[in-house]
Length: 325
Image (cartoon, rainbow, N blue to C red):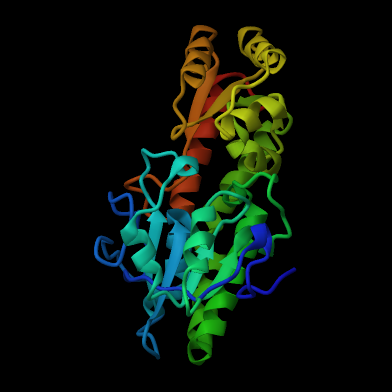
């Protein structure tokens, strides 16, 4: 498994140093679509105490990584996120000149990889002095074409947090003790409710058939032991903005109209005629629905708060629609 700050290898990436500013986040993202050094809104800094050194500048391309990184870095990081607009589809994001400017000061960059945020590598490639880069997909040993929504996998979340801490310590070894204490607090108490929510669904509803309009939910379905029966090719096509095959669409519609699925999960940030038609079909056939988002929504206190709220909504929908529990 590649080192946290090793040069990016996924997608022919070249790791670079990172820059960006905004005190470490512990609350939800600013309404701004881009949290650039000038536009980002400081969030309350979590920390075991004052940073023993000057804070390092970091960019977390996605706002959920921004939040985790802020919790891990505490008062020793100034973090900026690029993909933060909860109403936008991250797959269609086009970086601005201000985004590129944000990278110039960064010492550490966290990007998802897997084709999800290729613009980050393109910006870094133009830089003379490159920041340290954590490419999450590469770190996890995945490749382009694999499901990029890795933050919906609880086991991957643990690995990502460890890699972030390793990266922070490599950039600023003098604050290693501080980062270790922050990491212990995050992996211990901070994720307790999130982990228990996953376990509760697994215990109560294991094997319950569910559907999803796209692949964003696939990792969590596996973690909770739900039976995601939607055609994989259908989910991948919708996630990539393509039209699914007629055969796969027919299967998906049958699963709704024949109530073969107990809950339909949909991506709140992907709104198309097809997804709206499927949601209307679910309503007409009394199939419960749960919306999940790609990025942290406004008002979410933290990554784990966001994920826990979605899991609680899923649990309620399963119980209401005849799940195994």
